[in-house]
Image (cartoon, rainbow, N blue to C red; front, top):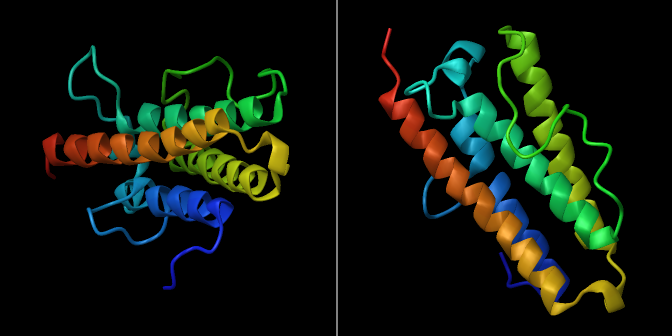
Length: 155
């Protein structure tokens, strides 16, 4: 793949590498969630620790938060009730898990579209830091998810 020709392309590639494009460092966020069913997603290492399901919902929320900060819109319409951390699962079914994964995919698509269409004057150093941070956030939680999967009891 040729290097990006614009700063905007660089940031779009960064978001995609962290979320769903093959990365050199290991699983990205979506890759870390591949093959995880609702039972594993709901498994909690200890009572005081987040499970994979909560990590995925949290990642979706921060994609939403960054998108809203980039556009200057109020944070008031996230599809899950609450903010930042969401106690999961509310309903321990495969359908509920897939619904929350769909929220994550939607929020990634919306953030990516916001970056793609961001007005040149809005593409500030602060915006660039937030976009980089969103990508790093995905990779950070991909690592956590990978670790939780390794800790989970095997059948």
